[in-house]
Figure 1 (cartoon, one colour):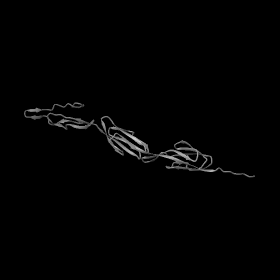
Figure 2 (cartoon, rainbow, N blue to C red):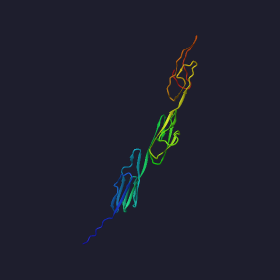
Figure 3 (tube, rainbow, N blue to C red):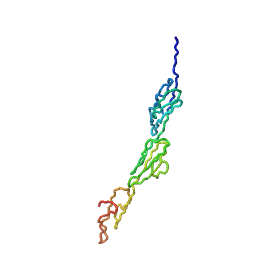
Figure 4 (cartoon, rainbow, N blue to C red):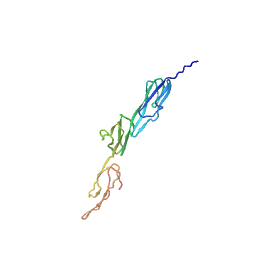
Length: 215
């Protein structure tokens, strides 16, 4: 009585991932064995840099991409699964003063160019960009080249308005002013009454044309 014993051929799956996280990883399996491979750590964060798994590709064997972090295959050949990773950088865009920016930031793909727009609110003006800005910092629209993480600040200044003060006999304090929109100011006459021999000049009040005021 004789028995011929046979064993399945062993085939090997090699798994490559630049940022680890592959499970179960490299395997030696019997020919025709189904296996599922996954990435468990995407995204990988490193400060203001992010690495996101975008899928896997298998050389030497048919496979199915279930989603960017899951590959299924029935192993019939020695094969290599390579996981692809995308690099993103953090963009922070904020406003200083009376205005807004759009977009306000987030994760951006390495090598992308993000257009950021500064918009002043009513009675404000754009006063320039500060931070990690390339190009003309005085234009309200700037392009952030995402070769690295960047932080931008759009600066806004209040509109300047002017108060002209007229007094026939001087004494106005502080007198004419250029102030930021919305600034409170107090004006007074400091020399009333003005004496000129037997003539006296007495301040009888003030009137403001073009702006609300309180006497």
